[in-house]
Image (cartoon, rainbow, N blue to C red; front, top):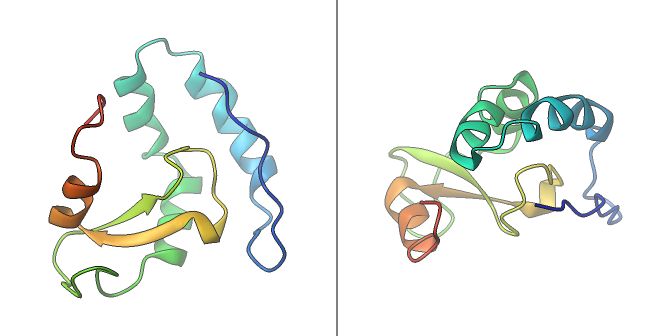
Length: 102
């Protein structure tokens, strides 16, 4: 899997990329996608990002139950704040319906 360079849209980019690179090398060395995906979500950088950008309600249905931070472009290492959408579990599953990895 090839990861694009981080977009640097004005007003959207936080200075996380150097931290992401450190974890990216370790995680992508794992061949099984489901294993390294779950490992990525256990990193301090993801916990910090999730805490910072997760909103109190789902942006689609306004629920406050079981919230997730969704990557709009589906690139895990893209931590651009414009790439995130707060979704409840049901809306997140609906968004990924048909994806191979869900």
